[in-house]
Image 1 (cartoon, rainbow, N blue to C red):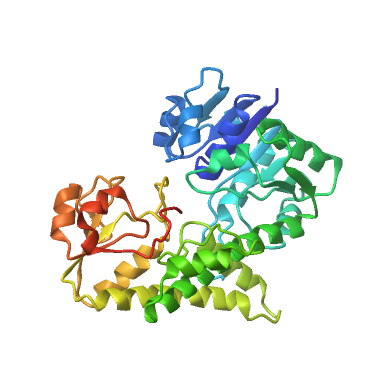
Image 2: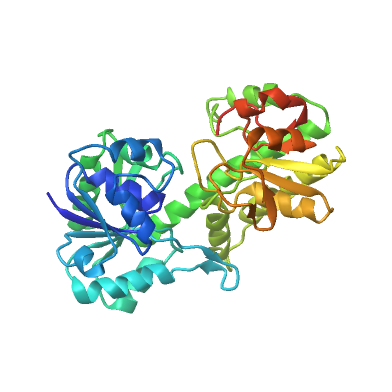
Length: 389
């Protein structure tokens, strides 16, 4: 058994911690007292069915702490999973949280490999190793879905470590040994290539969302059946019947910032497609706004701020851009979001009682349809074709 410390208790950090806890001694480090207390009570601070169930297992070797000394001193591996939001002023990820953690680790433990799971710009690992004069930093990209992060760790599509070395092989095997799916391919490559894999993967997913959204926009403008066309297109095995459900636009924590970061990395490199993906997403949201305005509503209800079912994260959700646009037309906005217990959200009124929300809205926007809305289908505006994420 190894001593593994995971810094950060978001969906990446907590899923990594819970992944290793049945097999190793795991310490979760965070600065949020409430999150630390919840984890020590075996309650997940985030919505993830597999994490919630696994935390209840009696044989889980997991403790959470606020104490950096306790977390780092005896660690064999330290995983960094802190947020790296996109900074529009610098046109790059804000990596200050990573560097702050590394600065804390090295005086306490200079021998443990530091595995960065946060998403970073292409070329960052080499830069940060030089900045801190250490070879202990390794990048390993994550490919996790919010709400299914532990599942995706247990059944990984691939395991990538950004280093060509014996140490990288050991880290890859450490992850593979903790999975249920033992046939996942492991790849060890240079750190810069691993960083690029992460950004190009998420930008491809954003492109796929944008493609089917533009298909759906065409159908809406020409009164065509999107369902039949999407199904017919997807029957080509090169395209497939997956990740093809139209939406209000791609959003969430990863895709918006990762596409912007990749575009920034394209500086001085010829490109058309990457920029077009970002523009397409903006155009889609503008189209949705125009479609809603045609209905001439006085009150627009927002059914959930979250992007998809099974997630409680609504950071950078597409619906929020649509709400801001609608407010410019002096339309009243009310929100139903049961994960919030406040009276308002960023100046918008919250309705915590479902029936009052349904009856008080002229039009109800739902990025994903739900059985709660079946009784008011005539009011609902959605582009959801398949009832799935």
